[in-house]
Structures are given as structure tokens and as C-alpha cells.
Length: 310
Image (cartoon, rainbow, N blue to C red; front, side, top):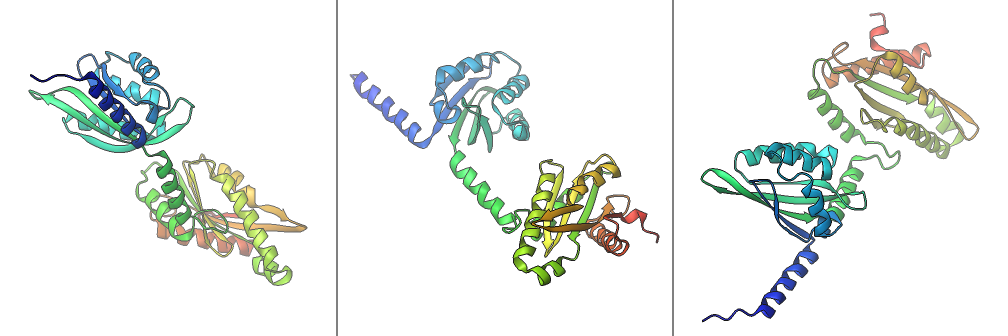
């Protein structure tokens, strides 16, 4: 006869808890019928609070229909920018298939942490009876990877995207654009920049570049603007979903004229419009470059390619 030793069982449970803590793993099981959490272990590693606190939050969505349950879970815990991962999770479960990915979950401190998760449906007679989810806190390593990836894409001197990354990002945006999207492509440079370098020294030229980039970076506070350094004193910009030409002019005004020390600097800008002037990145670039040349020739701060007399 087998004798059950509760002391050994308790020790095994402590070992499991310790292992989960060290690995920062949270385990969760939800029954399909009634959408109830039937098992939760080590919530703190992922949610930053106790199992009891997390269970209270799950209680609010208990019993909801399948799609609604997952959607409401996302509203409570998932970063809005990661809702597409939630959609993919739904689709996978509807096919009775497991799914793995990474997303950001809200912690008790109000901040989001990156987690890697795998959700495995348990199926009987072609129906899900429950789903087991294993979540691993990867926040520290993920943020280091993101930082490293970002640094590889940036121009270290001006802290905007480098030429290669800018071309890749803008080209992808244009390729994925829809017919009714309003995109404008701009090339801008600093007037008489070589003269500043030759007359006052490269240290002044460097300060001017940094100040111009600083003003351009303010444009990137809007997710609909991409700014990169093309080379030397030239920068390229993609404006997505802008309202009209007046808005573009208002935003470009940030680098119309600026000062570095006692020196006054001005810039020129050429702009081409997607689906009006061209429908490919290479043609947009060529037309914006033509408009930039006209801007410098006519001494107008901004020239639209469509306004040049052909």
C-alpha cells in the first residue's frame, strides 16, 4: 500500500513555486464552459501582484462568450498596440490550435511588461474544454533587444533614423499604403551649410546639424511622421495622413529658421505627394529632390513638386 506523505508533497509544491519564481513564469488555466479561471500560479511574476488580486480582475469577465471574454481580457491587461496579437490568439483557438507570441501586459504599478506566452487548448470531441496558458516575463531582455535594434537603426550623431533604415521604413509604408491614404514625402537641407563649416569651423556646423535634427525630432512625436538623415545636412521626412498642404507647411516651419549661438540658419524643403506626383518611393524621392532644387533656386522655404511649372 502506498503511503501519502503530505510533508513531501508540500516540499514538492515549494520547489515548484520556487522554480516558477526564479524563471518568472505564470501558469493559468481557463475552463471553456463558463470561462472561469480554474488554476492560477505565480501571477506576481507577470502581473506584479498576488494571485488573489488577479483572480478578482478575472472575476469581472467570468461567464462571457468566448470572443467577448478574450476581448475584455485584452482591454484590462493588454497594451492597445498589441491587440493584433489578441486577434491572432482568437483565430488560433477557433481552429483548436495552440498559439505562441509576445505582447505587453499591464502590471499593478501601471506599467506594461513584455511577456512571452503559449496557450494550449485542451480538446475533447472536437470542442475546447479548457485552455492552459504559460506566461514568461521577458521584460528586461526584450527591452534591451528593442534598445539595441533601435540603436542599429539610428544615426548616432543626430539621433534620427539613419539612411538605410529610413529608406526601408518609408518604402514599406508606401508599399502598404491604400489608395486614399494621404502621404507626403519631403527632403530638406540647411542653406549654405558648407559655408558655415568653412567659415566658422566644423564644430559650429555640427551644432547646426544637431539643432536641426532636434527640431525635426519634435515632428516624430506624432506616429504619423518618420524622419531620417539622408546624409550631410540633408534630412528626409514622410508625413502620413496629413490634413492638407497648410498643415504640412505649418509643421515644416519648425526648421524654416533657427539660431545656433549667434548664427541664424535657414533651410529649404521640397515636397512630393503620393498618388498625385508619384506612386512609388523612387519617383517620390526624385520629384521631392526636384522641388528642393527649385526651393533653393527661388529662395522659397518650401516648394511642392505640383507647383513647379513643367
